[in-house]
Amino acid sequence: MTRPQPPSPHALPQVLWIGGPPAAGKTTVARLIARRHGLRWYNADAHTWEHRDRATAAGHPAAIRFEALPRAERWSVPRAELIAMSLHHERGRMIVDDLGALPPAPLIIAEGTPITPAVVATVPGGPAASVWLQPSAEVQRARLRERGLSAGQLTLYRSLVGEIEAEVAEYGARRLVIDGENGIEETVEAVEKIFAEALSRGPVAETGDERARLLRYANRATVAQYEAFFARPWSPGDARTAVHAFACECGRADCRDDIDLAVEDFPAPPDDAASPPVLAPGHHRAR
Image (cartoon, rainbow, N blue to C red; front, top):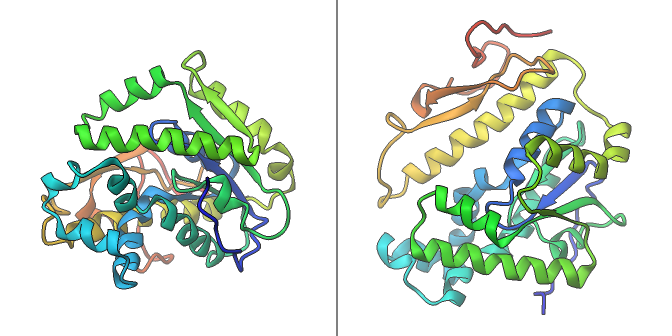
């Protein structure tokens, strides 16, 4: 049975929801749609450590245990404890709270494994524009193999597949099976069709400046994620050596370029007009 969720105080008609287990392609699809249509992209993965800090501050036992365990031991605990320490159920409500604090325009495309049908059902206002990507076992296995995960991480990710599939069935939620037959463009087009009515209504970013601000929001969330990770006493590495592929902030509607940049070299806040944009070679800020 799905864990019951308390009603959300937030009505979020501006949010398009994409859920699904790890390796479903949620991030790639949402990122492309956001850049193509001028949407705000909310990536749940970029808020992982922020959410863990909130849970720890609230005294959540599984969050506290995760931080206290040596890194090698975290992934050798029983399956049920792996799921509990992932905060899979708790983070959904945190995501809703995050989205409720964002500006009402433009549309937001929110994606992440903790976005479940039970979570979306708590949002008042009727059926939401939502879809759950469900990779076949073969597709997920191949994609996870590429990530070089530990046995414990693989156990967690595969366990989440069953939980999410059962919830999608229980709620009669819309799903899109990812079987490897189609490429990313075909998947993006299929999701765009599901969201077509909402995308046609908008609002969306129209100018280069508006698009650039949305790209900076997404890039800044990634920087904050790295910083929160490196702040942990057990964390290896630092912002000087960590390199990430940040989205080009030129603001052109057709730009899909990324820039490999050390996290430490990303422009410091505040993210105002004086902050230099992160640009791909040869690109200029659109207006």
